[in-house]
Length: 124
Figure 1 (cartoon, rainbow, N blue to C red):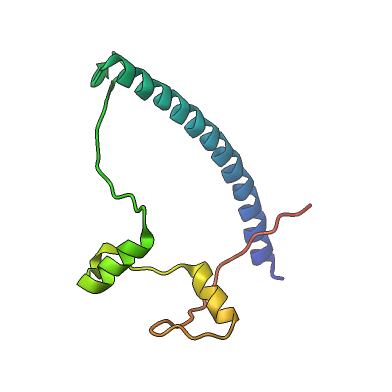
Figure 2 (cartoon, rainbow, N blue to C red):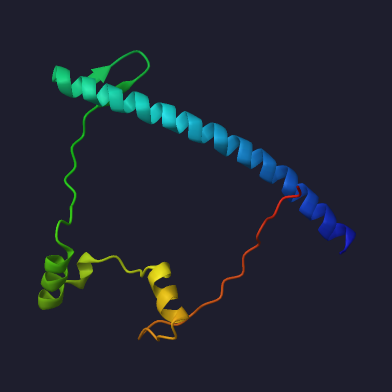
């Protein structure tokens, strides 16, 4: 291994440790924030408040309507019959595709692509 490559790997190890520590701190902060926001929303709903403003800022309740599939078979029938394929996202499950590929099945319209990534294993 070249000295330059060794130096790069050592630098990457130091930065990975820093990133891991920061991500841990960020996860903890996000969890605490989510807990506080859930409590605030529940209290706002209980009190009938649509918005709360303080010197620090404002929270307001925003409502959004999103789909919730309760019967996938009925949805798939609807999509097939009406050719409403735009209702689906354009991606397939890697896990489901990989299972079929491992069994030797070819999925029409899909090819395998190899993506090269670096994989890190820290020193013990």
